Amino acid sequence: QKQKFTAPQNKKGTIEIFYLKEFPKEDEGPFLKEERNLLINLANLIAGSAAKEIFNKLQVENRERLKELWGINQTSQIIAEGKSIDETLQEICNVINKSWQYPKYTVARIVFEDKVYISPRFKETKWGQKEYFVTIDNNKGSIEIFYLKEFPHEDEGPFLKEERNLLINLAKLISGYINNLKGREIYTTKLMRNVPNRSDEYRKSLIKNKQPLQLFFNKQIIDKYIYFDMMKYKVKEILFVATLYDAFMLENEDHFFEQFMGEIYQYSLFSLPRITGVTSAAEAVEMIETTHFDLVILMAGIDQEAPIELSKVIKTKKPDLPVYLLLKSKKQYQVF
Image (cartoon, rainbow, N blue to C red):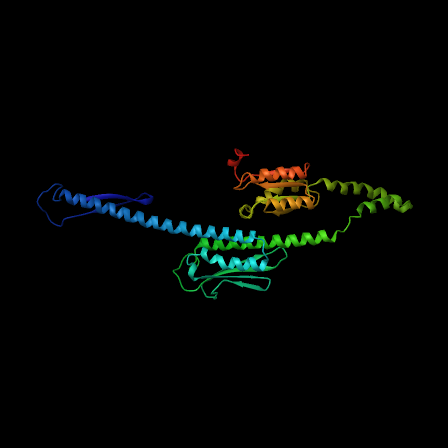
């Protein structure tokens, strides 16, 4: 007797029964019809067992992916609270263990600017993985994960390859958060200096001076000043408004900003525009009230009404300020 069966992923198999000697004829050769039914049931059990194994595997994989997504979302929420670097890095340390396979036996450590932040019950072991990050002021940091006991071997010691990717993404989120703070400090310091631009006064002094040698230089230089004055009409300052999650997704698109800035770069005289990034409507309104921008870019995220409402507010306050909407996919064309 022979019975075929099909397992998940279209894998096929057979189960066969043989007698080693001749027996009297029954319903199917020497076999009873009940034995045929038994063979069918056995084949179904084997196929069902294979399906259950694959289902359990998919269930485990989905559970791990959900934990990883939770880790990224939780880290983004902590960063969005706007606390100090010390508080933020410590809180991240306290929660990210839940995104690994064995959270009860997982501890974390973040090192930045000679400061160390550790999770509860921290202990360095030989079962660990580490990812470095660098900030805009060239300060180096690292984020580390350790297991407190030995576990079965996976892609990277006891760690999954997805856990390595998660660690890389967390390092990017942390460095992006610190870079944002450092950039704001630099920008604020520059504003406080409030050094006036005296190029116009210097240009007038060239015209007023009537010495022969100076007249010659005036003839050579004045035209150049016209060229420099034209630089005020190029795009120098861009305000970019996006949620932390959307900004994180853009960062994963390796060439996004190069492609986005390509046309602007072509017409820039000496340098690329400076982009100021904010993550809320309140921050955006505050920035346009205190700082000059040549254009604003709003990223359309999950909340599709928010960028529309914000653009109305911006246009009310700055009617001549161009506002552009950045869509994440072609599907959003129908919405906007």
